[in-house]
Length: 574
Image 1: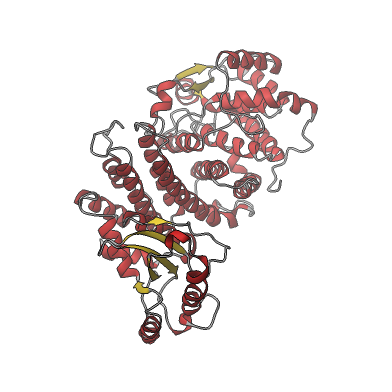
Image 2: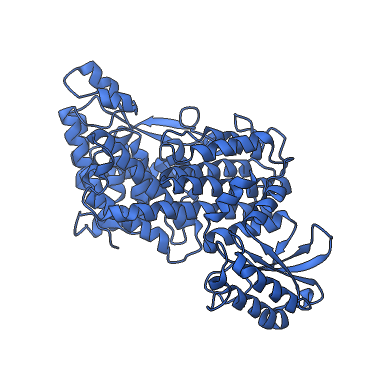
């Protein structure tokens, strides 16, 4: 295990990877960070200051870490503003005499040079001479990759809390990382044991709330770091993101069923896990970005048109979910990253027409997530353009009785089904339809009202065998939705009978919301959304709740009618 950890450490960048792992390690050792690492803020050589009792001699001390990356040689030692010696000099000459808090003045000072690699032989004498010269100023220690790996194994993956089964499952997961067909089964077992959960999602009593749960989340954050890095290094950023979703969902489920879901330290540890999710998501986004502005830029990844459409819609869902989660999770008033992802999504929809031809009915989830992201980031041209194309193609495929989203959601059925005039076969794959219902509701929500009227007429007169349906979660759904799919065992599926006029539908929605009002709203009064719920809908393929669309229909109805869209073309800008 130590060798695996050491190899993992060597792949980390200094910024935003190694410096996010070290606070968790030091916390496991009993230290308390004075401040968290901050990019862009001058720190006079100190990347991470912590206070606590030394595990070896039990002496209270102030530990100052200066963090580097990789093997440190002569060029890294001196000669630039980021050189090791420059950082150490600033700690000795500026930080220690001027920046210490009064409470830390009398504590023992220990300066640690931490890196993901080793200290090269041509630099070891420089290091030895430096610490001898400044022995009266502080104690010094070098933490290379092997030392950090040893400390991680000892304090974070201790055999009493990270048992042999956990180590075996983590090794298996790392070995299969990047394999296309890998189902994450080993990670699921690891998550259940570490969080103290039965297969049903109930507590098994092995992990108590509070500190034990905090430590478990910290260990899982490390495991996610390791698996995501292995998958990314194998070229599969999608698998890394799907795994990050699973870590987030199972951990959030465990927190919600604890005695104190708002426990401060538990929430802080979850936010660190959330930051890892954001990092993994952004790596996925950056890999996809170059393809988004190219016409059919992803068509080279598959030969069959049906498989291509399924693959594209999966990426649409992942991209939209990441955008919504980052929009809500990051501390950014301008939502720079969320809006940037929305721009990429809009470009993808404009440049890859097959995104408007979903072939599985469950893709209604991905479509709704994408429309929600584009709506909350005000990409209205992209919303209306793509929605019009989706509705037009859906009606065309229903009329031709071929290439429509099949209701069985089976890829095998999709491959075998070639359309035709067999009414029994058509009925088995066309009947119950999520896609038709959600597209009709979205048409009203964003003001594409002509599309709604036309679609209702076609469905009623030409394809009456299509039965639009939607799903409403209930209290049990909310309790279980972060552990697995819930729409078949909780909530209510409603067969929708759409009235011919938009006004009649709005009136029906108004009455629904009077009986079941929206309680989650954003700062500007629009219907809000919880990022963890968005992740759950995509990951577990749980139908998108229409209540969010209902809320948008009521708020945007008049605005859409008064300000008809100038263009229906998708746009990457905004």
